[in-house]
Amino acid sequence: MADVVIYTTPFCPYCSRAKRLLDSKGVRYEEIDLYMHPGRREEMIQRAEGRTTVPQIFIDGKPYGGSDDIHALDRAGKLDPVLGLA
Figure (cartoon, one colour):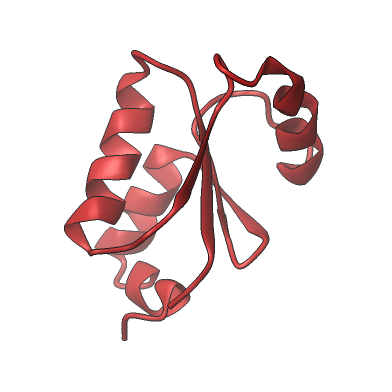
C-alpha cells in the first residue's frame, strides 16, 4: 500500500472530505495538523510546489493536490492504482 501524507487544519470541510475518502478505502495515512504544528506549513508549501491551501495530499512523496483532486482521480478510476489498491 502507498505511503500517504495529508496536511490539514481543524474545521476544514475539504480536509474532512479527503480523509473520509481515504478512510472509505481503508488507506492508512499520516495526518499533519498545521494548526498544531504551524512550523510545518512551509514544508507543505515546498512539497506542494507552492500550493498553500489545505488539504495537501502526498502519495509516495508525490503531490496530488487537494480534496477535489483526489476525488476527481477516484471518479476517473485512477486513485486505487496510485494507492496500491488495484
